[in-house]
Length: 144
Image (cartoon, rainbow, N blue to C red; front, side, top):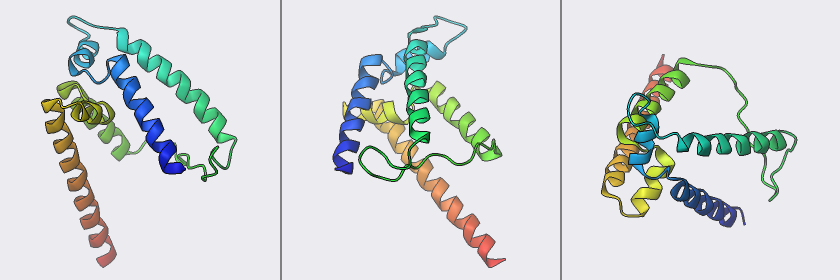
């Protein structure tokens, strides 16, 4: 049941990305182009998403289990680390250059958009490189 609900949530999320224009890199870049032909429409999409998210997190914090009985897994740390800051900067730069972030890129790739496939491949390569570097760092630490 958890997998079916995850699939339905993913489909609803993907549909929302398509309907809102978040899967269109030209629209995203237009939103990020503050000095040029700025398109503020995605600000309303983001504002709505943040509002729904805040309500969801407030409700989730009061629960120990999800509605389907799975344990609630919320972030425990609110620390601003160097890794979080630099990761956020890398995310923002990638989003601004490509017009994609991970969710919309996957939706666009599934819709057959060629540039999204390149972005998803680069994203997966970056994740694999990160995993390899983390393993190397961990193995180096455990040897000393």
